[in-house]
Length: 452
Image 1 (spheres, rainbow, N blue to C red):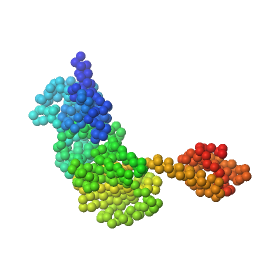
Image 2: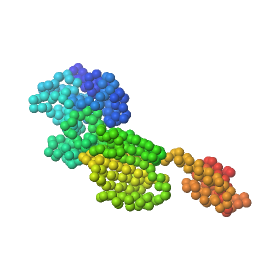
Image 3: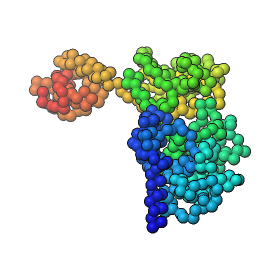
Image 4: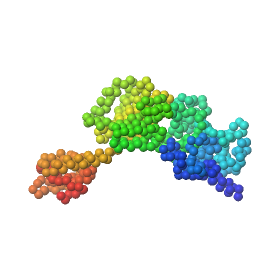
C-alpha cells in the first residue's frame, strides 16, 4: 500500500511544480511577445513546468535549488520518477530537509545519479537561489552530459576563464547555443537565474536532442517582419525594436539609456533595410561594380561577392570606423531591384554576438512578390496585348509579353490564312490566337480555349 501511495504522490508531483500550482495553455504574464514564450509553452505542454493557481508563471522570479531540480528531473528522468526509490538517501545525507517535502523524489533521483551534492555542513539548502554557473552544471549533468562531451572550449567571453570550475559547462552550452550573453557581451556567471531563463535552456537542450541538431537555431522563435512593398519577409530578435516607414525598415538593438537609433550607444546595433528600384536597369554585375567602386574608399574594407541561398546574387561589405563596425549586405532581387541591409554595430565586448544576430536576420530573408504590383503589371500586359489585335507584324512582339506561354494547338490550314497557333498563358489565364503568315494576333480570350 505504501508503494502504491508513493507512486501516486510522485506522479502528482511531476504534474505540479509547486504546491497549489496549475497547468495553463497560456499564462497571464507570458504573452507571445515574451522572450521565453515558446520555451515555457513547450515545457508546460510536456508537464515539465506549470504555473501558479492565479494563472501566471512569474518568469522573472529567481529559481531556487529545489525548483531547478524539478525542472531538470521532470524532463530528463521521467522513467525513474514513475518508479521511485525508497532508499531515503537524501534524508540520511542532508540535515535540512523535510521528509514529506514536495521536491524529495526529484532530489532522491538527482543524488542517486550524482547530479547534485550538498554543502560541507551536510545541508542541501533547497530554498537557496541558484546562479548561472550552478544552474548550467545541474542541467547538463541532469541530461547526462559529461566527460568528453564537455571538452568544448571557447574564448568568446572575457569573463570566462579555463580555470573556472564551470568553464566546461559554459563552453558546451555556448557551442550548442543553449545560452546567450547579456547585453554587454558577458556571461555574468554569478547572476541569479530566473524561471524563464531556466525554461529556455532546458527547452533548447531538449529541442536539439529530439531533432538531432548540432546546435540550437537562435532565430527559430523570432517574430516575423513582412513588407510586401519591399518584397521581403524576415525574422528579428524578440528584444529588438522595429520601425517601419514607406521607404524602409529599421531593426534596432536598443540599450536602456538610448533614446533613438540615430546614434548607437555601446553594445547597441542597428539594421536599416531599404529598397533600391535600380531605375537605370543595371544588371546585378553592373550594380555591384558601382557599389564596389564606392566602397573601396572605406578603411580596411572587405568585399565579398556570393550567391545567397544558391539563388540571389549578393555582395557584402565590411569595415570599421573609430566606434562602429559596418556590415552591409546587398541582395539583387528577381524583379531587378536591390534590397540593401545597412548593418551598424557598436564596437565592444558584444560585437561578435551582435554580428551573429545580424547575419541570422539576413539568413531568414524570404523574397515575396508584391501582389498589388503584380496585378497592375498583369493588367497592363493585357491592355498592351489587346491593342495589337489585328495589327499586322505585331504578333511575335505581343507573344513576347507572355514569357510563360505554351502552344496548346495548331490549325495547320486556316480559312483564307496561313497556319494558326493557339498559345495559353497560365499567369494571365488567357489564350492568344496567332496567325503566322501576317504575324498577327487574331484574338485574346480568357481561359484555356481554342474556340474563337
